[in-house]
Image (cartoon, rainbow, N blue to C red; front, side, top):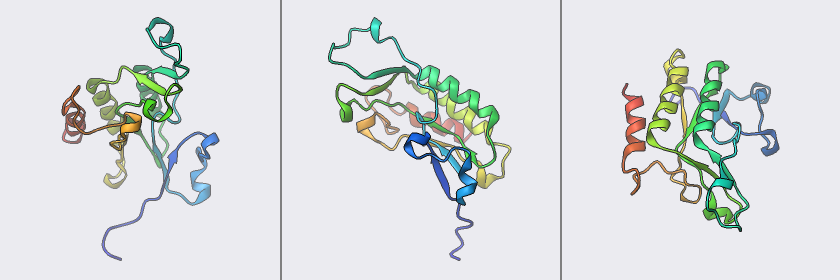
Length: 166
């Protein structure tokens, strides 16, 4: 009524153990799902045994590169209503202390490729349905940060800009 347009109601794509709906979103009256990595992607273990980590560490160390590769493979089979997601990084050590989930190897170049491939995967859709979601809520307790950092400066933001204006 206010000229905003049709409301698009999406569920976050998470595993059933987190009460995710899977492909049954339409049965619940929803328009689709949105990707929220690292959820609904394989978690490939990293080289904890080859690193000098504290013996107290009981968490999971996973490969960001492997996660991106798995996510990109899924882009070729997106159903209508499924909107892909990407993540800048993920490390919830601040929240979980010695039992965190950490993805190592995140960098702006791989992230830019992931976001670009996700955008390409939805480029054939009507303009209002060309959506790609990014897990980067400036959530410092999970390392999901899109704003400038000392390590990477503006490069993650620039990667998004590069894709948006390509």
